[in-house]
Image (cartoon, rainbow, N blue to C red):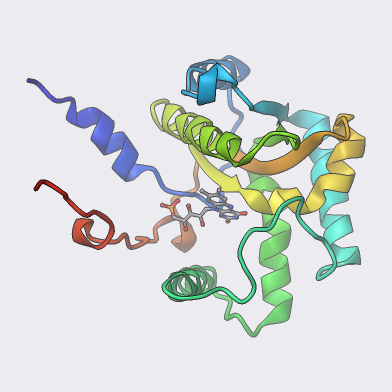
Length: 227
Ligand SMILES: Cc1cc2nc3c(=O)[nH]c(=O)nc-3n(C[C@H](O)[C@H](O)[C@H](O)COP(=O)(O)O)c2cc1C
């Protein structure tokens, strides 16, 4: 049987990019990406995703408000759902700290430098200068299974973007901005802000966009059971 190595290549080469060029993205392209992503599988075809594409003046307004809200309470914003247990246990703590250290090094910011760290968080809320921001919501009355479905949908967007030369950064940090997003986007109370995503043409001159983020070797996460 023939394989299509192109698909593996797209999967392997996708990276989260944290800096984008000041170059517009054709809205027809965004629509094609989202339409393709909507073919993701979901439990009994429940399709729990809902998204808001934010560009132009709305993007300016929402990112400005988000940065202001963060500055007003840099340690006081809470997401709509827990990200990690506190404290985080091994082996996840080492992976988390390893990644944060690697990203901080690339961005020229050590973890103890509060001022620079806040500046980097503000960049998150500017969609890293990407011309397109997407906010994802889900009906909070659904169960954990719907988060599984959501992951496939998000990955589809990220891969379909790569297929067009675009890049992304998935950003659960946007869940911290749920009060502002609820007001700006007119979200119904049952809609939970799951995440955001930056979408645009990556600026690959930035060190943080050229990091190699390590992955586990196969035998550390797969058990083959044959007998
Ligand atoms: C559900 C999810 C949420 C994430 N949230 C953020 C985020 O808020 N900010 C950010 O910079 N990266 C975020 N990321 C990107 C991860 O840090 C990144 O996927 C991981 O370090 C692996 O790197 P890679 O995507 O470049 O392969 C998120 C990724 C996922 C899957």
